[in-house]
Amino acid sequence: MKNNILITMGILVLLGVAVQGLFGIVAGVFLSAILGIIYGAVKKNKQFLHWSVIALTIDIICIILFYFCLIQSDM
Image (tube, rainbow, N blue to C red; front, top):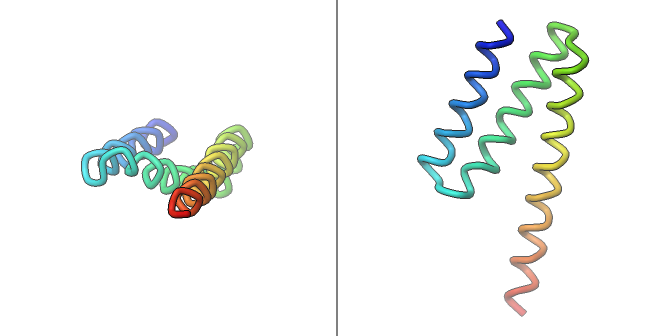
């Protein structure tokens, strides 16, 4: 089951890149992290949950920094 979740996460990231280009990585990682958090909580897999939360946190920080830099460049 764990391999199926990892394959699904990889497909989400690749589809994001194919559809949205470089920005699709952010969307793919975001969706994959949410999927990993759900899987880790349901199966009580602490390691999977831990790394998914880390990936989600890094992804949210990158999104915030991107928009902060985007706002700064308009001035």
